[in-house]
Each structure stands twice: as C-alpha cells, then as structure tokens.
Image (tube, rainbow, N blue to C red; front, side):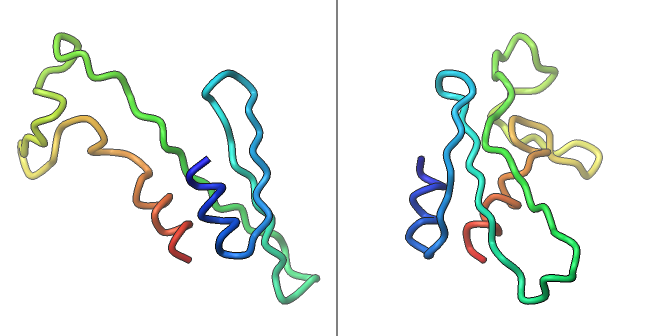
Length: 88
C-alpha cells in the first residue's frame, strides 16, 4: 500500500493485486515515448527472509563483515531497486 500510494502521488495509476492475505503486488504501466520500442520490465520485492538466529551462521542483524563481504539479513536483497523505482 505504501508503494502504491507513492506511485499514485507521482501521477501513476498503480494496481494492487493481493493473491494471498498480506502478500500483494503493485503493478504500474508507464507508457514510453516510442510506441514501436519493446517494453521494459522493472521489478523489485520488499519481503525478507526469516531471521531466527539459530538458523544463521552469524547474527542476522549484525551486518558482520567477513572476507570483504557483509553477512546478515537483507545483505543481498533488492531494496535498492525498490528505492530507485520509487525515486524515478
């Protein structure tokens, strides 16, 4: 609902598709300037993996750096894409 509201504020007409309780998708079609050009799909997701500490080799909320990589919940995710979609 938050994403749909932000997209509506930007002048788009988002459609909220809820296929299961509390599991919705937001779909927005933005027309391009060249009707002969192929379409472009941009997508992201906001769900996260479970964070039961016993199931992790590191504290899921620590953001531990190991061998130059960050380990923890959300370390490999698409929130940056979601932020970009809403910003643009």
